[in-house]
Amino acid sequence: MNQYPAWKYLLVLAVLLIGAVYALPNVYGEDPAVQISPGRSAEIGSALRQRAAEALEAQGLAYKSIELAEQALLVRFRDTEAQLEAKDVLTDALGDQYVVALNLAPTTPEGLRALGAQPMYLGLDLRGGVHFLMEVDMEAAVEQAEERYLDELRSMMRENKVRYLTVANPEDEGVRIKFRSPDERAQARELIEEELRELTLRAEDRGGDAWLVAELTESEVRSVREFALEQNLTTLRNRVNELGVAEPVIQQQGENRIVVQLPGVQDTARAKDILGATATLEFRLVDEEHDPFQAERTGRVPPASELFQTREGRPILLERRVILTGEHITDARSGLAQDTGSPEVSITLDGQGGRMMRNATRERVGDRMAVVFIETKTEMRRVDGELVRETERTEEVINVATIREQLSQRFRITGLESTREARDLALLLRAGALAAPVYIVEERTVGPSLGRENIEQGFNSVVIGLALVLAFMALYYRIFGLIADLALVVNLVLIVAVLSMLQATLTLPGIAGIVLTVGMAVDANVLIFERIREEVRNGNSPQASIHAGYEKALSTIADANITTFIAAIVLFSFGTGPIKGFAVTLSIGILTSMFTAIMGTRSVVNLLYGGRRISRLAI
Image (cartoon, rainbow, N blue to C red):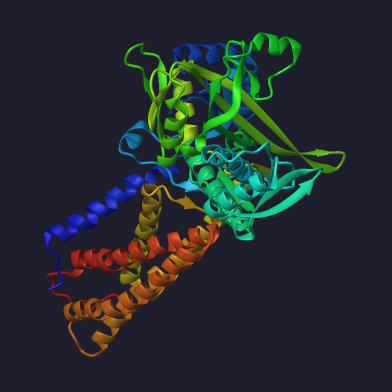
């Protein structure tokens, strides 16, 4: 009686060893580090490594190592003072081609890293990092929607041979269409009301001209605002995930605001670049009828064209009409062209985008088409005590090619300067463009020192709670209490191991969940031990009492833990970031405590008492 088959002992031992291995990386600390990431036209390699080393050595700055990690160069230091100095030195030495950012690098040994063992992520309140409250420019979202309808109205009337004079979108006045006569206006109104029910129309007569004003309906404005917020949430999540920020928190707050938390990011300027920069493409036909050099020299640009600069600095005139924008791109993959070996990006469009591209290129075979790369950064600056929004927009022509045949949903973009630029462009296009500009209205940095203080307080709470429980169990249940204490320590190790394996984020509420789990784990052992005591008092033998104690307490333990587990799932489903952190550690703690309190302690009890003749139990 009270003996496990060999496989159960091996299972418990295997779980213990695996837990110890995957919990071990959390014992090692982190090195202050500087991460060097390439810009769009730069590469990471041995030459950059040599430049970084020479720049640091020239200033007498000692470093632990320089290593290549995930498309970036990581320079480790012994303290934060050297890290901060090195950041300034490397920024000056490498110039604008590279992004130099502060970081923290785990010191996990290579052997553990080879097994995939990594420390668990720490939340913003423990590790430090940056917190942004971003506001979506809903007015710009509505204006962009009106701009899309402007192009659609123009195309619709042209295709249906409805004559008009001008189509414009003046500020706060909707889309205004000018006609020669009321009859032409009536014809257009009938067409628009049939095709575009999202618009409300009203007629105006000014100076002998017939006008038709198209405005978005209230329901359409609400839809545009909701879509802008949802699309921006998705895009920011994709952008941050693609760029490798670990365990970010990106969630909606109110009707037009988004909260972004980036744990472990020390460089707020780099974080702003990640969040504030938006990138997209525009495909336009080249204006072959006018001289771009003359337009640049005289400043007179044809009304239907716009003047741009190529990467080589040459002027080029493009038609104002945009064939296609990046919002119709469903996939973008970087690679090398088979014929030339130069970097390229393969583009896949959605159905609507494919139709637009076919229609635009059907009659323009032999003409040239340009790809315009557009990057926008919007941020708030304080000027004379007031917050002022500043937007920086960069436009450059990255590719001009002759249309050899009618294009459709799949095509390639060439003319990129490096494979790194091709990868970055594909990344940004996959992540998607923001549906409306966003700007930062609140910025908060949680320093590493405050994070360390929170860690110390959380660690102390776990240690004090654990010590009190260990002392009580050892005094009250003697040998069995010591067995429960062993299971409790193993339970903590397993919780840390599972958090590390899942790469979950530990926060202060998560530590509270661990402290709660300590008490709950002991509850199961208390139920078992009291059952054993009751069986002994009823006159049963020690072996029979042990067997009955574990068997009869099992259903009660399962009921209590299942109901708590359901509550944890509800908290995770409907809670926000901190509550989810609490729910995750509580859920993991419930599962590990059931394993250690039932199967773990039973294994030790069976090894001590199983198959032996004993007269009394130390319980």
